[in-house]
Length: 129
Image 1 (cartoon, helix red, strand yellow):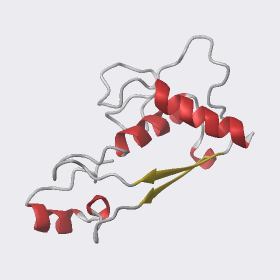
Image 2 (cartoon, one colour):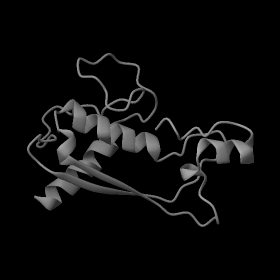
Image 3 (cartoon, one colour):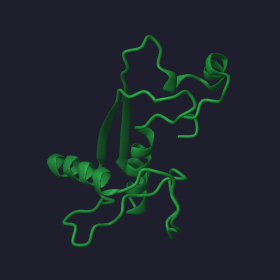
Image 4 (cartoon, helix red, strand yellow):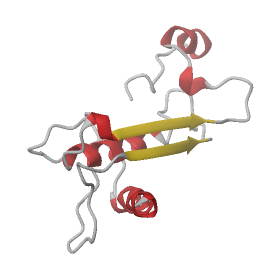
């Protein structure tokens, strides 16, 4: 079952096709507004199961290219979370951890908005996600 959950996670991330802001209407409210769930693939062998406990660790070692840009991993994680929600996986079955690791002395993505604003003279774009 663990292998299936890991494989499903990988497939869902790769199959989403777009990690940008959502444009399509959906009957199911999004858990992370502004980002789509992964698109369903016809004939898919597995879809998220509301009875399964999903324990997923995302490793994020990327920086945004420019101050003011959202960290590139966050939209991917938003897509994954929205996919679980779309298929009715309840909050108590979603165990998601994001491990941030960067080679710089400070990690901009986890800065408070005030600290980010002091350094870059703008709001932290990652706060919303």
